[in-house]
Image (cartoon, rainbow over all chains, first blue to last red; front, top):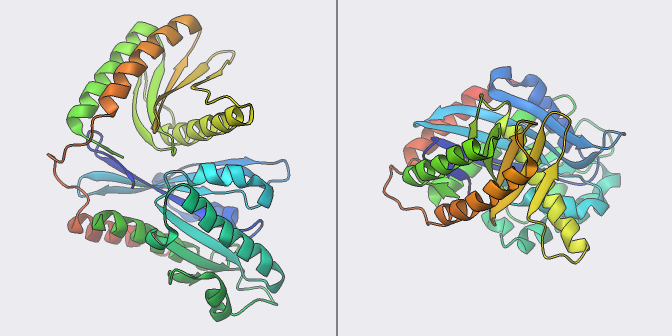
Length: 194
Length: 157
């Protein structure tokens, strides 16, 4: 459920980019930050290690402007992908309205994708939500690299919810905004339905 | 979380009185999931969105630290700076109060007034939202938002 403030005429939605280490979550958010109209975005906040690996989260606020008299914003977060940072992932997931699960398409990363996907299910369940009821988009990332799984194979393995799938190369920007558009529309549709 | 106009008028009134009594520069209410709720300050707050996400993150990490130390919870977080200090207190399970202040006031005073205001705010924020207002998020909102999303993200790739 987003935060709806009738006094300030504001609605804020929280979207979390999830996935295994080095799958491209931060790259997605950095690309969005670079390409979106500056007046529509806030600062890009990154809590990262000295090696620029996400330690806690990245955060970017995007303003959709006023919709039906309500200032509408999307708060975009990433989680740290490394397995040992699960406590941080749980904290970032609190109050989430929609999830983008970023899949690293490389054959060598299959186990990491599966582990991260199961971890997402577990953490969402633990906070009393159900991933089947939650807006979710799967982004098949790194489609430009050699030695990758087909989208159909990845879909069979990781899309147990029949969620929308977007092919992407976050480094070049392909599919980045398509993913964002899809999840934004899903979270709004879900709020309207409820 | 849904906050009504009448409810927020009362909340903002409490924050205004607290700011004057405690002599702080900024008071903001933020959700524990990192969303800004409202703010009351001398000047326009610099970046409320970032303040909210970082405060919530910092508070959540502190709560986990409490659990590791077998403490039920830390309900207070304090950062002391050379020019500005930050005091964060939990108001309800889903709402935090952030106060920024300088050398013009004292920590003891801030803590005293903050603890009194926290009780009043908790009561105001615990009132369930009454649906006497325009249902803003309806089918029209959905259609208009979808259009705005297309416009915002078009030609970006």
